[in-house]
Length: 265
Image (cartoon, rainbow, N blue to C red):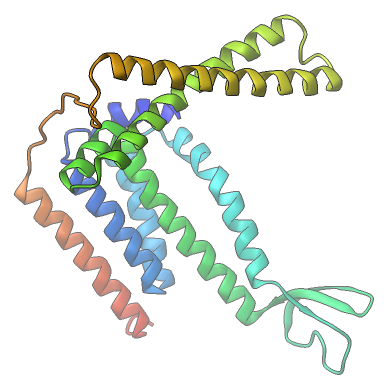
């Protein structure tokens, strides 16, 4: 989380208006999810990767490591959705492209199941790259600024802001506790590791409660009236860039329409 936030602040697209980046990411993700076109999904994934790594300047190695975690879950989920199981009977397993038989049970992929799994995989990866573009180019302070401009209820934005803040606080606390435990051979064996992990979780949860009580006292002492008053930076708009991004989205829509209509082969 710290690395993601650092790269978002150092991004070359940091100066772009948050609405432009959020609009690009969300509109492109909607097209990826609704188009039902493999060509469009691959195009979106490549486009978002190029914009995030090439245009925003995010290190390729870091981006690929970040992408590996959801890719594993997406791959497992897509494979599970496309898997077919048949029981005993005449012609059982005849339609499988790849299959494994255990007794009377045959498990494998049919042409339809493989097509379904591939579609889910491409659609999910395209959506993930859109979210990563937003996360790696837009710091959370800009996201909260945009939510306030969109008139999202103050309670929700403040909860988001405080939660995001305490992710870093608790992560730092957990790191300190783990370092102290490691210095005392807390992870030298399996049994020690289990005890140390339990102690770490206990310490973090207890400290979280203490931090929340201290925060309530501090806010009350400063006359909290139900809304946090913070300084906000102003973001300039660029009509030319907004028009270019709108044209990009229109191009993706045309590509999806052509591919769905089989005009591209």
